[in-house]
Length: 343
Figure 1: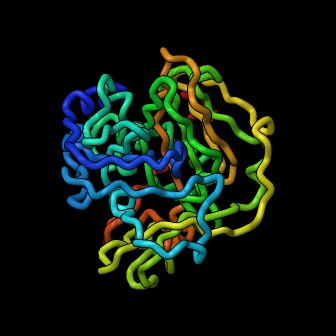
Figure 2: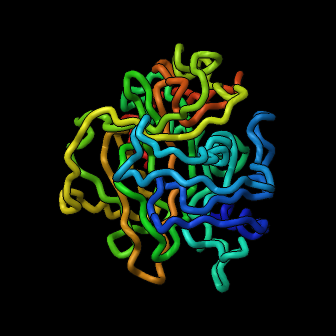
């Protein structure tokens, strides 16, 4: 059902012409080099009037720094400020992010490239629409895992569908808490494999024990005065909304601690079968490489949860519109002896 919903959206999606942008970087914050939106809403209406499909006329796609060498706040070169509005506006929408190089010089898909090859991910609010994706996120299975691991009020902050077509570029090493930061840290990632994954098609690689290390950096919004309606002074779900300010926010990486970059051989591949669920601590360092098999993609659904009682800073990149709250997962019945019995 999850892949079928993506099939439906791709079949109905007609990508509008736009100017692409490719700076040669293949791993720009998992955002792809070019971005686009879709005119087709997921199955069913949005659950909130603020959670809607992205507009049909996206701005010039923004470029974010590669995660391995982030741009520190306060060290930017003097230049025209980048437009990160597409990324920012995707928080409550089902927005299409394209693979780098997916567009030709005229803003159309490259000749011979299918829609499935062109789209990198659909994000970041796909759990806000009625349909198979929301059904999974709101299922007792997901709630049971979060509560069993100690989350008292698990709240879903973002969900994305990754297509990862055959030989598509990977995602650079990162910690999920970099982009979904709370105080104290509480990010929990759930990665549902929708296809078998191994080293030949770019499976995830993790650095064991890295979850005990500090969070090294944050992705923050700058250019807007904070403390005027964001969630920074309360719990993550006291007021998850911080949008609506009359300003042009932009995104930068803010270094928290210095750390030595570990070699690639310090990471272990995680082979998965379709239907496997990987549960990852927000500080766990992980990445994926480009797939080598020209016949195999690696699709997945990725759900990220935080503790609703933790502080959600007003300068986090992801902010819901004022008055809109993160979805909390209802505690399931405790009749099952094992949290993993149904997974």
